Image 1 (cartoon, rainbow, N blue to C red):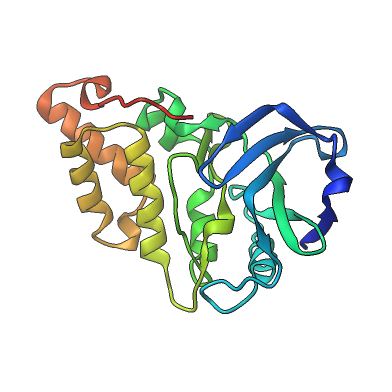
Image 2: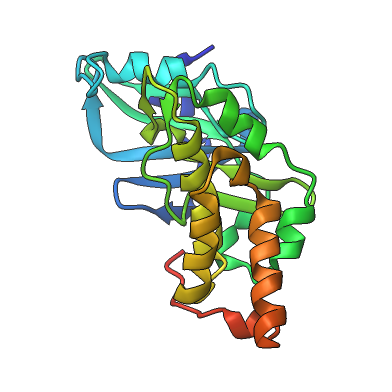
Length: 228
């Protein structure tokens, strides 16, 4: 259940020297009673009566998202408010680090003990995964992949299963830095059906490509400057 708290209740409980800038918010690691959580402070507060594209208030939208129970999805549990606006949100800290910042193989990602696919399937009848970027996917060898920034997901009455799975798996392949040719081969398989949207499919495509061209995985990657 979503809980509303005032800014005064978290003042001094987040690390102002340990923050990450995003395009619309600044994220702070928290301590004290909020240890293990992250405070995401919106650069522009959101008026409490501001409506989403679905015709509900942003607070109602966050309330609906807070009902997501998957441990692989860091949904909002606390909303920081003042009398007029929503100032930010608090969510559990994702395990591991950003996948885009790590040099891991597809075999490592595939073999992680992870239920992210089941989590995506569970939400796909209610939400469309929107604005999934390289700063939204975390990875740890023990916990696998984790998604953050769920507040950008869009509420929907339609079945978004294939769309959501493609959004996730194609982005995973992208942040693993594969060359455009290999990315297109991967995406071609992902587009075939929801059942083809699996980490194992990406693994098979990569291995076939490497074997055919007699390459190592590092040779099939291109590295770009990481912004995070």
